[in-house]
Amino acid sequence: MTHHQPKKETMTPRERVLKTLNHEVPDRVPIDIGGNQTGIHKNAYRSLIRELGFSEEIEIMDACQQLARPSERMLERFHVVSVSWLPLWKFWPLILVFWGIAILVAHSIARWVAAAVAGFFLGLLVAGIIGYVVFDDDEDVQGGEGIVQEFSESIDSTVTNASFQLDTGAGTVTVVSSPERRFAATTHSSFGTYRVVRDSLVDGPAIRMELLGKNRGWRHGRFANRADVKLSARPAWDLSFHAGASRLDLDLADLAVRSLRLDAGATNAKVTLGEGPEEMNVSVKAGASLIRILVPESVGCDVHIDTPMGEKSLSEFEKIGKGHYQTGNFSKASRKIRIAIDAGVSSVKVVRY
Image 1 (cartoon, helix red, strand yellow):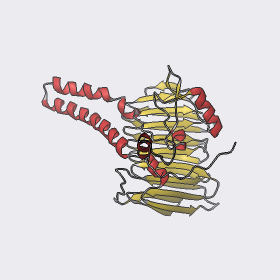
Image 2 (cartoon, rainbow, N blue to C red; image 1 turned 90 degrees about the vertical axis):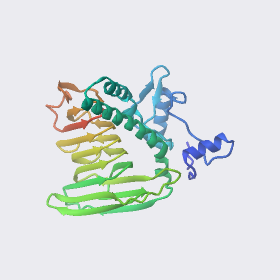
Image 3 (cartoon, rainbow, N blue to C red; image 1 turned 180 degrees about the vertical axis):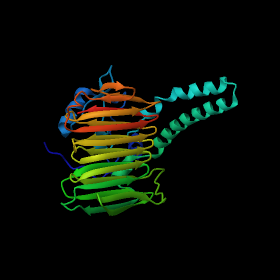
Image 4 (cartoon, rainbow, N blue to C red; image 1 turned 30 degrees about the vertical axis):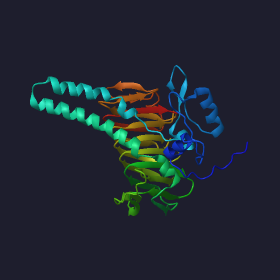
């Protein structure tokens, strides 16, 4: 089968749809996939996964119509704008609950506290609406306005341990492994520039990457901020990510990760872990986020999770105690992953693959 290279896109998704509705010629045909009325059947989606060579599980979004929920990777493949409401909309009843408490209670302090909590959840929903209007990942892909930077740091073959830290704001971050003994990154931002600092520590090199500046290169109310990072499969890494309202796709399956720390605000994060060293420690702290962690079946996994106002899903895990889960092979596994999750208003899923 011959795959034709698509021509460069010159429009935002909104411009493309409006031009089509006006019976004008857009830069390419608009693609609508993933909605309840414009979805894709699971069998067709399975064929599409096979054709593209992807490896992913199929999640059903509509049991009646048997519609598949397209993954973030699939949506990115076709440049489909997707906004995840899952961390926000499931908590809208709490607005009514706390607002009702504020009306019923007589004590002034309790009333103000209840009203403040109701306002907090209302603010989350408003933030989601603003994010839908303002945030456009397609800008990140196409280029648009902003500054593009390239970074590269070689890692000597004698180095056995290293650390990497990324501090960024709203945007998209991807991390993959590289066969080369180096750190490399490509960034595109319209409201600041990135800086990479390398320090030589006793335990190995420490690479810190951070977003600087307040310049906002807005285009029709949208901005661009994307960082694509490649890390050498070796040495053993201590990783730390500090993100705001971001989308994170951390494919760490082929990396030797000793520790991972993720501090996130309103974040949609997918983290794929590998077998790594004998023991890996993962710490996740999040606010209103959608977090998905994939762990290999061959590894024993221990999870401590605290989601007081969120939801959690841990398939193929045994409950040991309150907020404590383990895989059946944890005690006998030669390689172990220990995960500690503190996520307030979040949806957390830990899946074995």
